[in-house]
Length: 137
Image 1 (cartoon, rainbow, N blue to C red):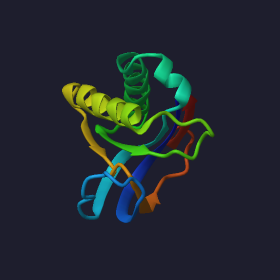
Image 2: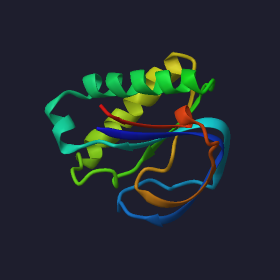
Image 3: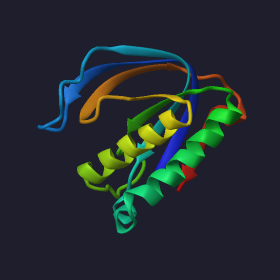
Image 4: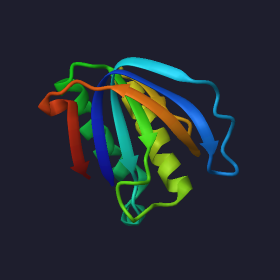
C-alpha cells in the first residue's frame, strides 16, 4: 500500500466522471477545511494479508500524520496512480470502510471521496515539511 498525505487548509471535490459501472451515486460537491487528505493506493500484494492488518497499518499512519498536523479531520481518497499494482476494487473498498470505522471510533471526523469516480480536485496545502508525507505501508 502506498499513501501520499497532504495537510490541507482547504480541499474540495466535484465528481467528474464515473469510472466504475456499479459505483453508487456520487452525491454533490464537498468542501473541507483543515483536514488531512490521504491519497491511498492499495496494491495487489496487500491482498495476501487480511483487511484488518492492512487497515490497522493505514490507520496508525494516518493518526500519526493527523497528530503532526494538529487535525481531527481525515479524508480518504482512492488514488490508483501511485503504483502499477492494484488490489481488487472490493478489497480496496473494504480497507477504506474499515479504516473509516476505526478512525471514527478514535474520535476523528472521517470522509471518503466518492469511490469509483474521477474527481475535479481543488486544494490549498501549506508549504512545510510534515504537510506532505509519503509512505509505503
